[in-house]
Image (cartoon, rainbow, N blue to C red; front, side, top):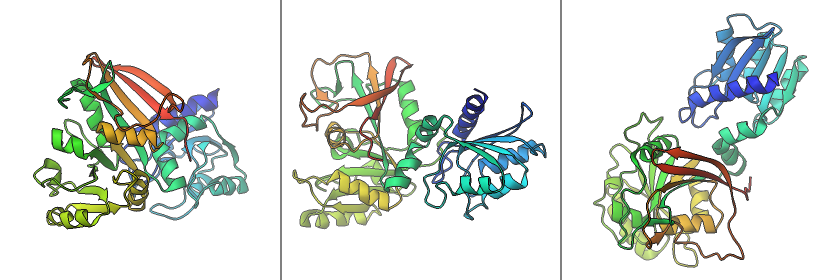
Length: 365
């Protein structure tokens, strides 16, 4: 029980680095000596000391014979920081409890091996599921090279994200929008479809919060038959990329966007002539995009769910009823014989809205 209690504390410590550690994972560490906590640490930012080293420094020499609880396997190679395994060995720590093995090929069990070779007792897998979920972006990208896909939806109680005239601002309340802006500052990119661009003219930047970073903005559009007179095409501060079908017409239209320093990414069209979403995600992953928050619209959301390209859904349900309008997953083509299944992870009240967090049951990593 003590192992789980101290690992829970390490997990909570790791959360202080959320959004700031990119591209490194979130890691927390706790050092316990003779039943007392003597050191606490978490990884704050790439290039700065890791959680284990911070905890050892915090312990002020009270580490000999102690136990360290660390959420992720200590790294064992020279990168931006020297190996944490060496710091642990030098500190005289005699037992290390690890939440999960680091999937990085440069680590992946090597850290455990180095510690064991120096006579340190190692225990692995304490609250492993929680640690992996905390680092879901890191685990998926490391194993597959594909971005982790978050899908944010805001709907009425009867399942519509806009009325029949495509009016949707604002369905969710101010507290929900603040939460959404915080999420924007924790991902690599925020994405919408062409319809959302034309109807809402969104900025797609985190506002009214202190963001960990400013994400790239992505626009998915099958045709580039629209002007550059939208907020997202001001790239003086935030980069923007358009993902579009690779056609001769789009390559001609792309010139006006390139002149405004907007990136245009051409991907093969799918059977409907729209940019193939799976290919788009592969290309974005190869460019270092590890996480994407999709915020609309209904067609794009439906396609992501229909083709099993999503990982986690944030669904805000507001106490409103439209009776008719645009369904939140307009692009889906499935029927009741082949439903898409999700696992509910959390349900909570946010202001006057209901937030339902769901994960994909058919993970491919």
